[in-house]
Length: 361
Image 1: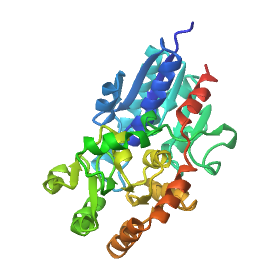
Image 2 (image 1 turned 90 degrees about the vertical axis):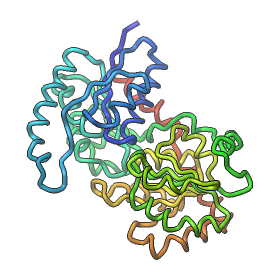
Image 3 (image 1 turned 60 degrees about the vertical axis):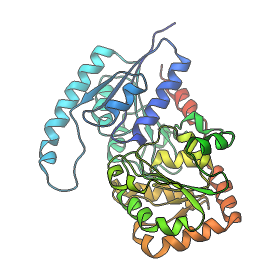
């Protein structure tokens, strides 16, 4: 049996890293003797998260362009040239059969080098509005796995495969874990649980909102799991109390989703895909600070199917308490949102992506 080799590259945020790990795990199931190498950006979170998942990773000296003129931007051409050279060296040494990119700074030079060396490449685009790296790479890619319809505006139509985003397989059946999850967090089984997700690094504006609304929420007989992010944990841990669990990072996503009755979340692509599978009522608060405002576009893809509520950051002060209270009191609305968002789930995404990769072997 051929001993296949795969290089995966994706990073910068959990939204790029976890899909790459999920794809590697599925490939490993199907090819137990395969060799894997990850390539990430030095100093980014993939340098910790990938080894924790049991894979080797090499770091490139690469970073994205800032929106204003900075020293970082002046260094960008040098970093890019260095990363391209290093990517070529990695590919020459490792000799992969296929290279898979899930987005983030490092995947650019790596997939560019792989394409130039004649090695098949697969792009996995998580967002409804692709980033500039994947748009550039798409011309040479063999397959482009996407999670949303209508991406032929950005990519060659004949290469697009609608697969959905890879998600953690332990989210498929969370209902059976509800009692265990409530006990795990020491919560009251008779109260409704609100889950607040700000992404792996945290979301300043969401945290400010929860801090401002905390007293009002608790008077509505709600208990809260508040993931504030590691950047903000020191500021908000003081709110830890009987009915408020403040955490920086969540290891057991299946438990928090199982415990939740209502969810407030950013609209990163991976989060949106997970929330479709989880099927709970969601209020999306997209980050306006991400490239091309793609979180708003991700959220709108769900909202337009009547599967979630969308609140812009600019509307929070005037609208949030009204919208939240109305949703909390309306069980019918909660059930309707749950049913509609669940229809958009693609639970087999990882397997479908791996089928695309296997075609290139």
